Image 1 (cartoon, rainbow, N blue to C red):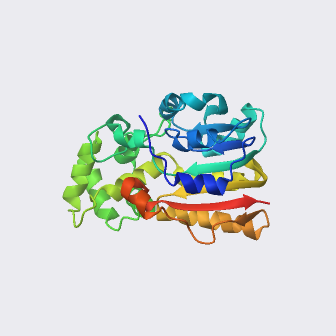
Image 2 (tube, rainbow, N blue to C red):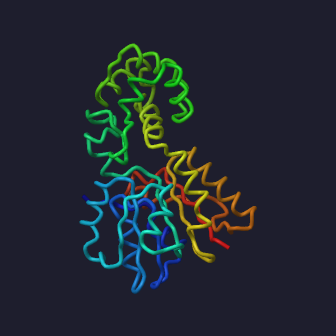
Length: 287
């Protein structure tokens, strides 16, 4: 399975890839960005990490032409320091993090990320972890569910949705959940009424906010002075956290922000690769 990496030209430009550099792709996915960085290298290499072991398997298949310049590790953001240490590294020349959900995860019904196909209520990026979306949907209290859907999904109808979920338990599949939500809060536009609830569940299952905070806190220690950091976000909450994290590093004199304003994909990219339309890129240089 192949994947079109989002804002590839801009990512490479802001990373300022050196042929002898060592780079960290913190979100390998299907290795679109990883492969592009590796092909710019001669004596350097990319340490490519992802929480999803299955995505890493596919990534290896997609990078056979530049495999000698890539080292793969299964690791979450909070484990990146350990991943570097396992490769005998303390710091890298650049770091890239694409916070979008992998195409493989979205299109595999058994992973339970998409409401467009019926599959198990899973949503775990690392299937080795215990808690899944099934556990949250079926065992959290009504109030906890409502708060989670409101805070993480920015869903104003969270109480009605939580009430409907609790009354319909047990819920086993994504199709059941999507249909239930559509009945509780009927569609009013093009976006499916379950979209924000699914997003909230995914964020909660994978502790994405906590992991992003771990990444932002670790960046000054992971990247060498003069090294670049590029982060792609697809949701307003994530972009706000990244913006604030970058600003804090700049105020502390640890980094210089390279993107005065957020960078968005060009019109031709949005036309050719519609999933890129909500992407936002921010970059900084470590001092």
